[in-house]
Amino acid sequence: QVHMVESKGGSVQAGGSLTLSCAASEYMSEGNCMAWHRQAPGKEREEVAIIYFRTGKTYYAESVKGRFTISHDPAQNTVDLQMDRLKPDDTATYYCAAGYLQFLYKWYCNPSDVRNAWGQGTQVNVSS
Image (tube, one colour):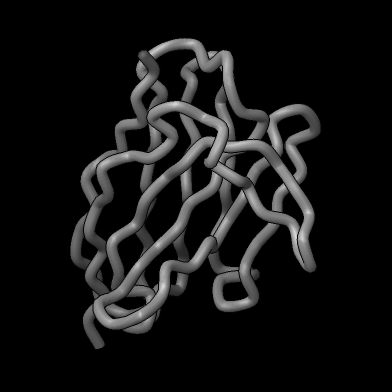
């Protein structure tokens, strides 16, 4: 079965950069998109970036637009999240998840129909 494995996160000062990588353990026969989500303590999970495999089109939450970049390498089965100009509010556990692109008020990558869609999560800490 396919598993999503995220790279180790880390700690960085505000204004710094960090790249997270999500690797699928084998060829994905399910899903047509990948998303990065994050969840901070006491807050709801937020989908911050999506990439649609077929066209490479990307979608971003307003909170990260212009600072985060999601990219896909089909040959490596990886999806990276480049995070620049990090802020303390970006501190959270970050998860990647495969899914199917859908629209309900906004575009989202729905993981419901993908087996083992979620990675284990990786911690990102941004200090002021």
